[in-house]
Image (tube, rainbow, N blue to C red; front, side, top):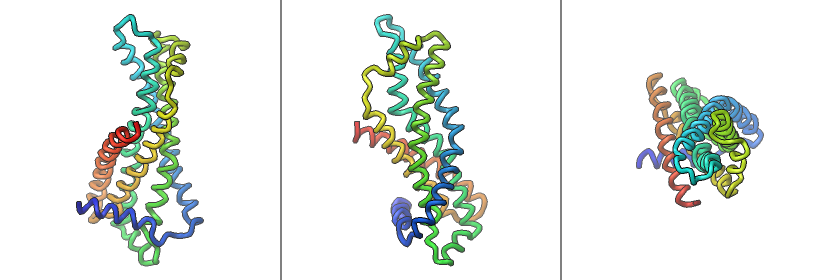
Length: 242
């Protein structure tokens, strides 16, 4: 409860005594590049192979001759949009982005750069953390959309290359019984996950104390706590919205 209360107080400090809007514009854009663009490669690789594996394993378990083949792509589509694209992508990003945020802020704390900002009368938590949170909430949905597309396309490549399904059947399955709210649900999850990952990682890094060893421990704690928060939020959002 101590850490939970400290976390909520930390969230409140992000919106107190903020700088002018123009100050955050460049900071947010820089963080979008650091968080979003620099994560495109790892998201692309993971998503493509997850879609391919899902397609192959679904076809492997299709043992009944009475089940039409296009069900393979329907399962790939629904698994990708509902779960794989938003959740697995954000778990991967919690490792890459979360550790980066916690390590950067932890290093600034132990080298007294954060204290220097406070001495100059700047709200260091708002100046350093708020751009990271906003950039995460902007770029994570974009990465989830990219992940969904590449995962479905990876399933298409794997299915057609291995002669598991024809391209016509795959496209027909993608269009069959499509529920547009699933896409909205995936984007809602990505925004919530982005907020949790960025704030938890920032919290762990911001309150680091000690030396280089503690920075590494803060990065590890940021990743593990972010993953737990993402999975817990995934369950709660599924219960509330589906």
